[in-house]
Image 1 (cartoon, rainbow, N blue to C red):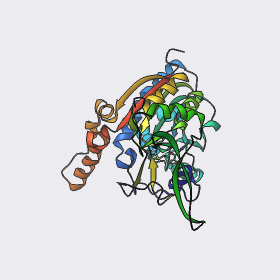
Image 2 (cartoon, rainbow, N blue to C red; image 1 turned 60 degrees about the vertical axis):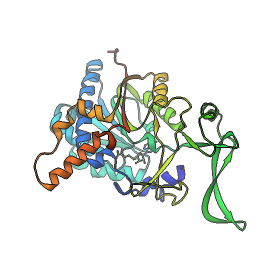
Image 3 (cartoon, rainbow, N blue to C red; image 1 turned 135 degrees about the horizontal axis):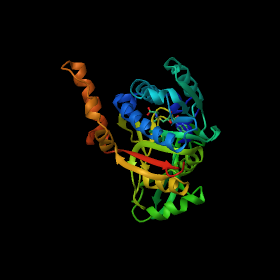
Image 4 (cartoon, rainbow, N blue to C red; image 1 turned 30 degrees about the vertical axis):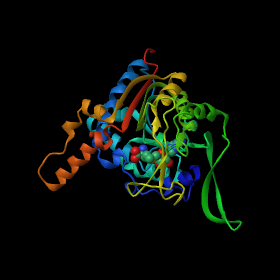
Length: 336
Ligand SMILES: C[S@@+](CC[C@H](N)C(=O)[O-])C[C@H]1O[C@@H](n2cnc3c(N)ncnc32)[C@H](O)[C@@H]1O
């Protein structure tokens, strides 16, 4: 999964064409970023009160092409200029080529945009960290049940007549990491024979790194998933051309591989690292309570109708509204 998604030349994210296989919220409509920018402005004001002399940063992790950055910065510039002038905007994007292109592309906004391909290279700062559809893009370990026993799927080159034929196959084998044992025990009862369960070990280590890089402020995580109960299976999925794919191992690098985010695990990792949950909400109520209906494009033209349908997809329960969640965690809220 690591190779299929992140090979620097042939990996899915090095070559992804936005909107070809799935839409992210900023690819759908800028109304999402407008609401996010207002939330960011409010949270920057809070950090300013706590740390009046600290420089303020907005750090977007998994920034991809920079489309969300452009929309957030534009909304800050137009609607919250006080904060636009005071922040530095940092992009964190593991694909270096994508990162460099996006920093270059954002120069015309006249904002202080900088970037790192690895969050651990960034010094600790005060401000707001955000991500949209980052955590679902972390590679996962896949557990399965074979002959009544929970094992891990190992991906290997496939051989025909003793020779590698260029394809790969997955076979149940021993757990590759000790830390998978508790996950295997938790799903042992509810995982059906032959079923699969994705375990994202990177999510917890990422959360604690985020906390180490945030001196004071907020972390906003938007992604699809839920608070999984221990033992709930979470099968990995693949997408290509807006459809589910049946074979996750086919067309390596040309299809998205992903798994729903376990927000309960993220919150637990955050709490262990000093972050307090301030909000956990479906995307629908997050957007509706902050006035997305007021951002509905007006008019009777075909274009206005099409734009309204896109905004509706953001908050409608059958669009992104229920499947996507917003988690906001805080650090240093009571310090000054
Ligand atoms: C699904 S895309 C989301 C892009 C963008 N946030 C959006 O909403 O349109 C996920 C992005 O996260 C990047 N990514 C994955 N793991 C990362 C990590 N550990 N650090 C930084 N970026 C990462 C991928 O390269 C990819 O560009």
